[in-house]
Length: 417
Image (cartoon, rainbow, N blue to C red; front, side, top):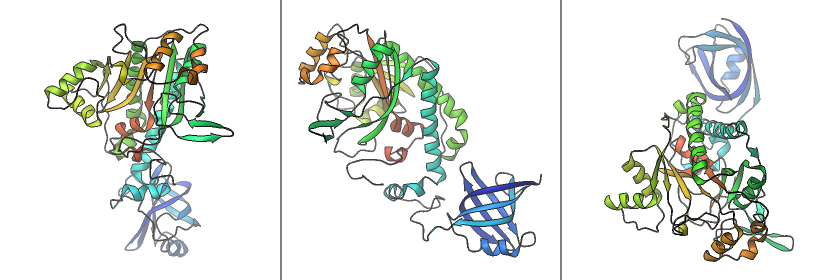
């Protein structure tokens, strides 16, 4: 099997047993064993290996041979070894994962944490999620759009806004691409986007951050049920793709994904409330569900994923289309593995009704004039939804804290690195 190779990477581990030196060399494809028996390699190589430490960057030229001991069934016998750059010692954390490291330390030294097999696997899975999202909707002829993140007024109302000075004006970081993706949908018909959004929430919970990535779609000539169908089809396809394409990464983090069987169950909001109350939860009609209650609902329903529909209008944003009874809206949440990962609605496309809803939420229609005016010139019914990328990654990888699935988290206390 002898084959010449040139490898470059990081020293994941190095040890000497008897007369043989071993290097576990890591690059983007994984870890390979470099084996240097004193009897088969030059004394210079053996001496150089004795000086190596974890995370030193090296270049190895040698031959690939079969091995009954190495995990991959092969090893490399080095003929040349060059130290490209040495890592300082001691390391702030051990990427081998041989000891538990506090999440705070991992986030402080994020670039080193990325080198651990667990963290590396998580973000390769996240990359595949993004790739699959774009491929799924591009194939279905959706147009990718680029909405702004600096805006003049709140996207969804509320006070959870980061404000900034924009020359002589006041501006905000967008809570959502909502208003802009609607304006695109009533022209392009079907659109999608991936972009950061910002919420000035002061609490620190394992499912919340102040900056997250959203994967959004919006489509014209559609109802809430139309886009729910698209959403469940995407999620089912995604889980299938991740199971196949990221099989190695899932194994490294001890995960197996269950396929979804469509259509997903639709649970009425009031029925969900009643089910929780019957099982001892203190919750009333008009309340939102806590994260604990979302998890409890999943357990009671015995569903991997399901929709909650029929939400009270006061629980949803001003742009949610009300049902004919006026008390509920054409809105939905998608719960996956016990957590809300997506929400959406059919939108209001009638200016008079939109103005009425803005006022009912205590918002000034004058601040939304450009948005309201966009529906005065031939706006079809339309609907859409948004998935939180980090939350979705969190549930697919079964992490307990969203910071584990965010490359460089931003919360109330963390602005660096």
